[in-house]
Length: 343
Image (tube, rainbow, N blue to C red; front, side, top):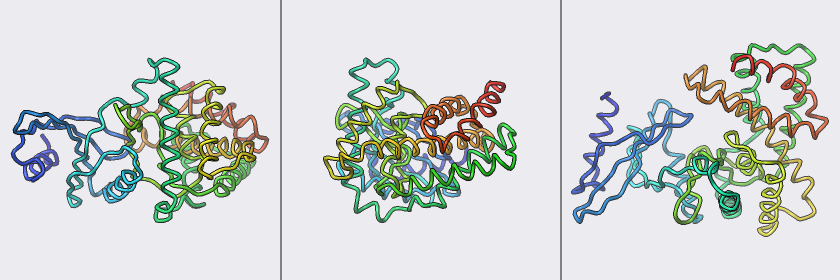
């Protein structure tokens, strides 16, 4: 037992919330791509009733719990289902949270029927529209998804995937083409309506729950940003893929919901599709770079297997747009072959 875990146990012992209840020792619930860890505890009250809770362990040197607390309160206020903070110690980096269970969307999707899959996605899209429509005023207080952040994120692809992981240098022409691609993607993203953006709205962070689906996790990095960002994160998920016809069907259903709450207009469908496509390319450039960084910087090599799907999305979508031709060529001719060599 390490010193931090002992500190966590001592904190639990001192919580008035858990006084006079029997608390089982914490067991690992999950970890994520950050430095956070999660533990589950079982609690038995005086009457013999049992309930489970989640402890977030977020070391203060690497993580700040305050955005999680603030965003959790906002999302709960919108009627969305997220973990509620029941107790906190910001000096230690511990939070006690309600437990949304262990069934992620990803864990059930592959075995689900076509109808069940559709129900899950429709629920997720409806919740997303709720976030975007009810969160309009609150989004103004969030960090901005600005040009500087977009630039930093896209450079994860060139710095970590091309450079560190694959050792693929870009010649002068390729560097100019790469800069042009980034400018196109940035202009498109910044031109979109600004809404409340979860920023990691996908199958690993959405929970299957008995009521008020979905449960929503990992929202602490929320920003004010482009309308299509979360939708493309969900529909062109880095961890599971669907036929393009199905994606378009869900995309249209989402678009019509946006029209109903006046976040889009029906004559904007074609422009909306292109904006979402380019947004997806930007996100997948970022994601592929993050997956490489997680391996080399943080020793988390399990994300490397998700890079090929992420790159294939860029190729599939990028082929529709002449301004993405150089990026598609780079990935098809150099990046994917080198990834295959390493697998």
